[in-house]
Amino acid sequence: MPTQPTHRQSVTSRTIRHEWRAVMALLLTLTLALTTANATQAATATTGRTARFAAGGETLTLDVLIPIRRTAAVRGPVKVVITLPAGMTGSVVSTDKGFNGFGYDIAFRNRSSADGPVVFSVTVPSTNSRTETEVDVAASSGYAVGVPGRTNVPTLVEIYV
Image (cartoon, rainbow, N blue to C red; front, side):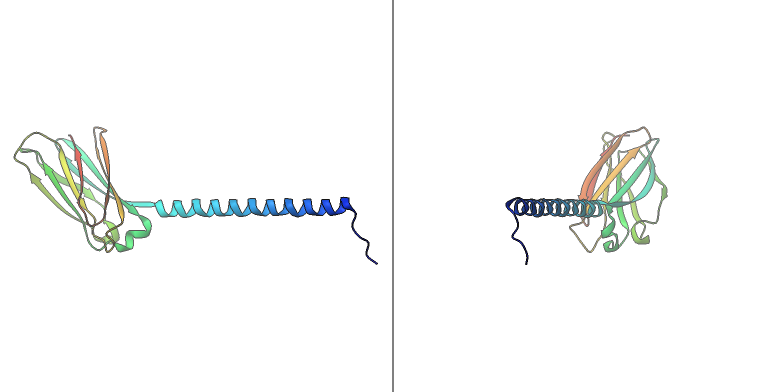
């Protein structure tokens, strides 16, 4: 015949159950935190494409970044329009293959004024117009500018050379 637990045994088993629940709650919390951190890292992982240009005696490096998970949505060449001050010339030094092998559509223009920055207008064509982009331009002199943007909308970056 089973014996009734003593008061001490009853309190001990309740304490063990309470501690077990606390440990399980902690493990669940840690699992959720790690899963969220991994999902956030995956959501923010980016890939970039690079083109280099010469203007004003400097080499300008253009980096275009989009989330890795959105690269399949890119549907054409990255459009780059570079507006230079009057009298300045520019040329393409090198490019990579662009997103999904589409490359770049590059044009140079001169404005009427000899003053002011070199202006990059960069558009990434995509089937998803809400995809975040980042456009970075760095001069060989060490000056660099980064601007956030979105696909299908021109992102303007100004840099003095």
